[in-house]
Image: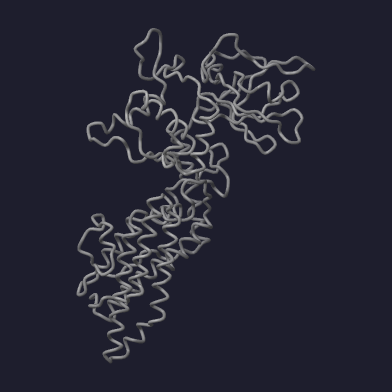
Length: 470
């Protein structure tokens, strides 16, 4: 399937991951669980509920069955749940002789200053405080322009403000403000009659083709890069034409050039609004309305982006700034202040009862023991940690979307080859801890005696991956 339809899983490096996983060989998958109290009951003996990834995936189809909307054109998902959507879900559909979605596209993660965000690290950046300072459209633009869609990308406050000022305040915002202001000043707020400059019209047509192709390929960064290159072309055109000088000359030639210049800039701005509307809907609509466009921007089609659709004689609206320039230092300080405030608010909202410190010689209650989440896991990969004789770097499947990364001090007792495929016991709810630069998300359970080597806890009978020990 993956070879016959290369477009089914995108981007290509994710497709290669899925092919490699499948080529390792697929095992039977149980679609029920007995160790979970909640869930949809299965019509079989004993306490069985359907595996969450079985009923959750099916809900995609059941949600749209009455609207004749299946198969879906696209499943847009996070990279950490790709296996469920690109392997399990197609298998379920094939078994039921139902059509598959046409494409599964896995996006990457947003990193903070090159590091994965996590609550344990305390480096989660919430969107609300950013939006309060820059506006939601600026954040949407930054993420889609700065990050190649489908790959991980890094966010930082400095990069956001730099991109905001260079591309939005000095770029699009300045073009909109100067174009509309000159039409107000030199033509009484009325779009002049003109066909515009042919060279700019041709550049617009070429840009439309490239942008549409990039967006259709989910290459939003490239599409926006092309749009801003066109904005640069229009800025250069305005500077070279110098309409402020043409306005001073009342001869027919100068006035005709002024009309052509203003119409060209305004028509370019109209088309730019159409290109950026999917990314920055509020800002695009704002500029669109200032141009005096009678048709709602949400109703336009690709054909409306052809050159010459702007009507001469149309009156523009009141000129309002769209992207005021931000001073980096106070803007960043404000976002960080709001982030701290929001973090405190959420902590208070979800505050847990403080843990009771139990003396070392005291027995614990069954409730205390229940707080320790022990899970059955299966080692899927193992390798020695460079420079550490006792440590192994493990990947352990405990029934989650992605295997857990663990660092275990068992290298003197077990070789990596001995562990592959072995079922072990994992403490699954420990806070992450970094060992030799590797974040360990859990602990493997082993017994040991004074001076002896650790012996892994295991099972004499078969037990499902992810089952909880009680």
